Image 1 (spheres, rainbow, N blue to C red):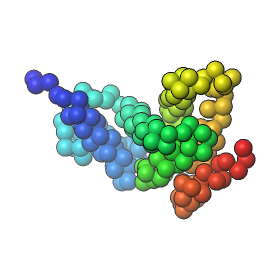
Image 2 (image 1 turned 135 degrees about the horizontal axis):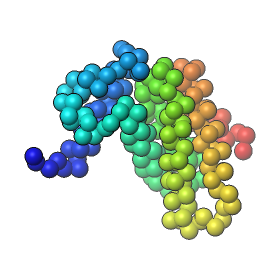
Image 3 (image 1 turned 30 degrees about the vertical axis):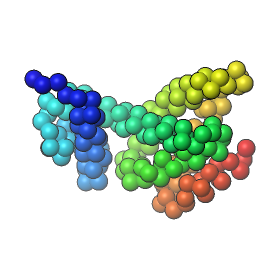
Image 4 (image 1 turned 45 degrees about the horizontal axis):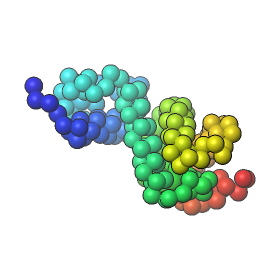
Length: 178
């Protein structure tokens, strides 16, 4: 059996993630089967199982991809300020508007929050350490948890309200209380 390149593996995972999210437009999340996902992604069930063991693992992978996108966006901001983090966070959420709606519709947004919490904490601690700024902050995990929790609750409200506000408006809302 030929060895797949990292790009091919990534592409296959993206196809599977996309298949699950698209199927959520038509079916209840709990009723979606591996067979449906594989068929929609145009792969065999064996290919599916080479990459994932469950639908929950697909969501885990999706969350990791979104956090990577946030990381990339934040690094392009060249700032780790509260405003830069908020702009990055809400812009990435805007980029995933349709997916967030699907997850909201299936009551999975809280699950997404739980899955992303540790990733965001790890990522921000790594950033501060690399920037040699970790010693400036005491109890940084609490501060990051406060921001991420607040941001996610704003996103949940934004999705429930029909996602009419822009990322800039969400940033203004989030930062007016700091």
